[in-house]
Length: 123
Picture 1 (cartoon, one colour):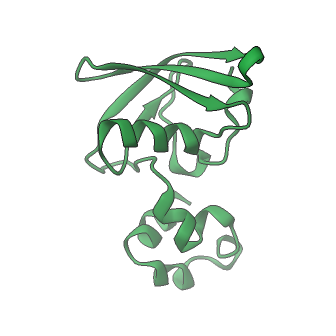
Picture 2: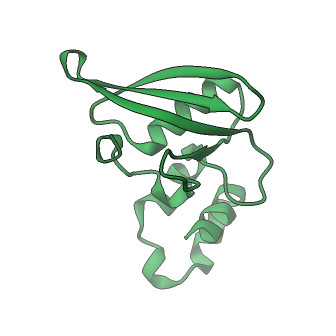
């Protein structure tokens, strides 16, 4: 999926060369692929470690603390219905870049195919 996503990011028409079972996936559609801010392996992009995810029920939000490998730290908030893709987009916007790598507290690098994963499943 991530290889197809990267191909579609670069050229939307590449989707027609993907395996048939992947062509209908929402995250691989050209518009979705262009808006996915999670970097794929080998892409030059800043890397941030998610140090905490905290639910703030009275505000219907999730607070995310990030520590970037260059030493910068930031706190972002997403709605309770936010996704990993929403977090990546906010982080990329704050860093003024198009793509970011996210490392989760449990230790894994987030793959672009996780873009629709709800943040509340990670809290």
